[in-house]
Length: 118
Image 1 (spheres, rainbow, N blue to C red):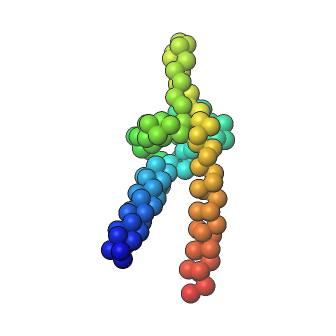
Image 2: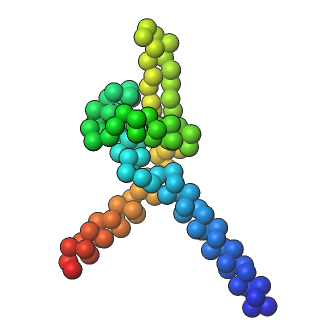
């Protein structure tokens, strides 16, 4: 009986860990949240996003935009103009990350305070 309970608890733990790892894969990294914030702030074109995050290279920005699009956090729209324009916008699904970001912000601020107090 005890072994079955341990197996169920271990499986629940594994499911929780997988969910946390997926969240960190999608939102983690140095540049993903700054890119999301830039687009959310109104920067729709590649060069505008790049200008708002000057420390990031164009190669990295391109990679991050593709990752965010694959995970349905942003939309990439091709505007058939001359020259062709590409614009990025936040998806409604992306807005759901706010419920994840706020506790992380709080934890980060507390962590910085703890480190400074030592």
